[in-house]
Length: 130
Image (cartoon, rainbow, N blue to C red; front, side):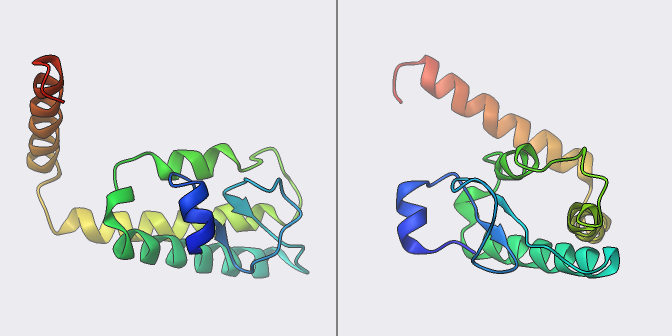
């Protein structure tokens, strides 16, 4: 979760963690703890995804800023131990929510709207009024 001190120091970094402790690097977005089974790791990963989704709901300014890319950049995808379940559970739960969201809208109409907004912002910056 994001605490206010960390948010102020690292506004584009999320702390996705089941617990507030980690053996990872201090500025890592991916904080995992040892587990006793792959199933437990998957469950913890799903919990982390739920916290991440709630963080986006609570602070929508982070939506579209590449936060998920920062999180993915801190994950060791070469890990073949039971802790691999963390990222499997995390991304599987996010995929579930992506599916639920995609069912409710025309994804290509939404893409066109986002692209038009980005084009307008780029034109605004080029015009020197940024």
